[in-house]
Length: 230
Image (cartoon, rainbow, N blue to C red; front, side, top):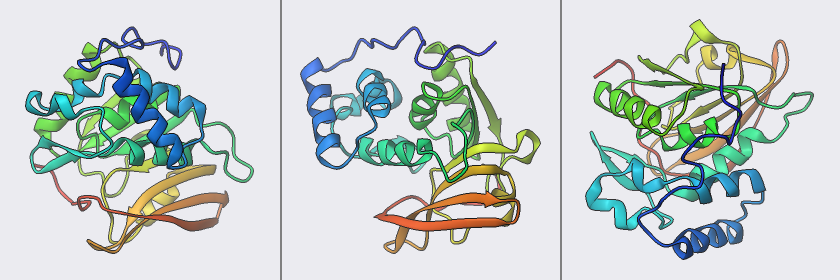
């Protein structure tokens, strides 16, 4: 049985920085337009320092991306908050998000944010080292509602679909038909799209069985979404 969102044992967090540092981060996110109180509460509680290399832990509660190894990064808190806020917004005719697919587990930080807010998260990662590290880290933090996959995620994860929401943490050159088909009616896909220096964060809603609506929300900068496994 999955735990209730927000009930994980680490929720109060024992950070390596002061509560004031987390409070400053949350205040900055609010100034930048994050208004979903559920998202803000989770980001204030989560121990972001647990998701970065030890040398970078002193930077964990600053609003910036940080390296996690394997030429990958943990996204800045604002981007994590924005993508989560967009995903949780009810789409036209949509129900609350209960089952979400994340493509690109990375450090597991975005995964943890989602797991605090929805019933089940399916997260797929193409880099074996990152997938294994995230699994160990998130299990150690008490999560039991995350399902991990080590696989090429460019076509989604059809075996467990369809999903109420899909979030992609790397930039695609184009949105695959497979991802769109794995959305429930009323489901939402949040994905960065475009070449380096020209990426946009795109929101796509499945409004009917064969109809999708999309809009670009903001310019972003992500590592590319790659095929294969490593």
